[in-house]
Image (cartoon, rainbow, N blue to C red; front, side, top):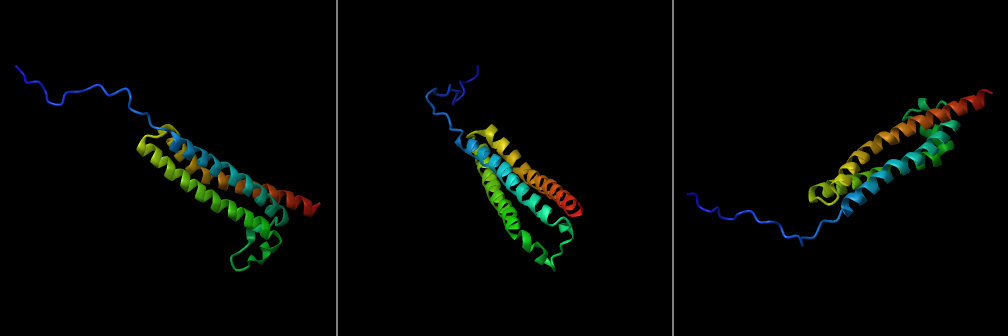
Length: 143
């Protein structure tokens, strides 16, 4: 007959500790923060920029003095972009670690998706708020 196989299958010990889902959960929280907070801040700032500069789309790189009346709002919009980028990158890195180490794999995958979509959400919020602000500014100045 056949010889008994060496190293036969053994039932895993039930006392093995389960891995924590902390990386996945933390990645998901950071991704949600990167998707929501910068979009809110840029929406408020872009609306004010559009309201004060209804023709702001014609600003060229040679003449940025046009943005002087709204320099605070431009600063807040830029800060929200960069902080959202940093938080989003941290969420992506933690999501990849969570997936690779099997520590909250589902939350890690969700964090990757949300962190990537955060940039799309940011720019949609920016364009919509800037357009709404410009429409408000045009109606205010023409009335």
